[in-house]
Length: 119
Length: 114
Image (cartoon, rainbow over all chains, first blue to last red; front, side, top):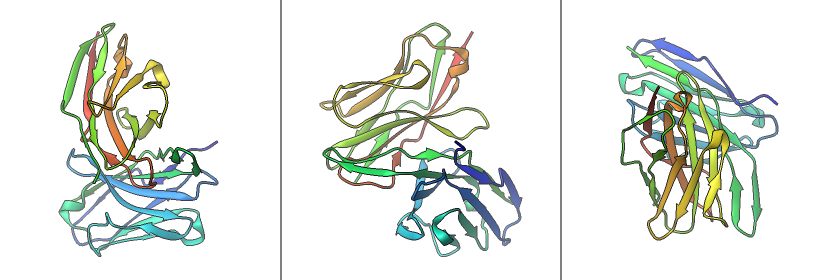
């Protein structure tokens, strides 16, 4: 079974340009997450889709970031216009959730990440 | 609010020696704890998780982690480190009664020398 895939693996753009990142989750996973790691700091949550709906977008830094998941399959994350501080590694993760006596059981599986450098 | 602390930026260990990577956490309810590893130029790989039950959790590649509720810790351990274990290790947590976003620590770089 294929894992989470992300494209591109690397992107170098100039400040003010637009970049679109793509994530393909594991087949059948309804949950899709975006995270990013900036400047060697901790990995921070950006947003969470359940199928095509945004469940939680509390981590999105500002309105320059737009995430979509049309049809509930792959997702895109667009940064427009890009700023220097947007440089970092953007990770996508997917999961399925089961609910039981011990609460929600979920393991998020991550893709390889997209390394974004804004010059 | 959830938080995770990995107090060591880097851990150095000789091959064959025991390896411990420390993690402490804070959640409002019961914790759901994870360890992930990132090898050079690779993505995050799931190692192991604690939900409930036995405090000692076994995972991939010979790693295990011990949940200690009184000390709010979830340290990752391996009895005998390999050079190939050199990587960046991340601890993560969320409240067991919710689902969704994980709170990650800053990561610990493990360097295993021959």
